[in-house]
Image (cartoon, rainbow, N blue to C red):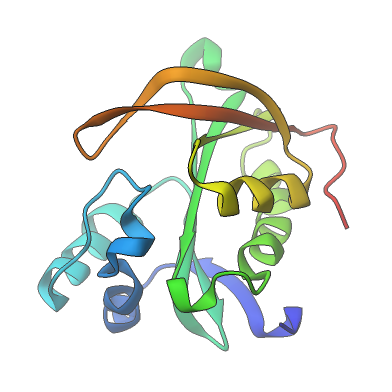
Length: 172
């Protein structure tokens, strides 16, 4: 995949059709906290009420069309030095290096947008091997296994904690 075809930008209302195409796929939303989007109305509402007002949720675009997202939410108060990162991409784009390339683009922008953040964290379910590989390719460090840590889709699940510090090198 040519990196020049991949871009990041804030979501816009006109992304609803593209968003619905990948956010309606249960394979994509399996590890996300939100359920699959099932209608264009639901997609429009999600973009307007969740994606656009979010502190840092950008659309991963391929040739200008939304195919996924990267989300970063800093903690507050005394924990504002940490931010949680999440991402997803349409299943037809899995295994092509798109998310890896998009994360490498996003991380410097995130540290610039949030100068007080020194640590990005990503929680990944034990079974989500593809996401673990993406984080490791970017340079995140697997810090530990958290037993029965995250609640998702009605279950308490085991998770791995990954981190990337501002002072770390993003893998090339």
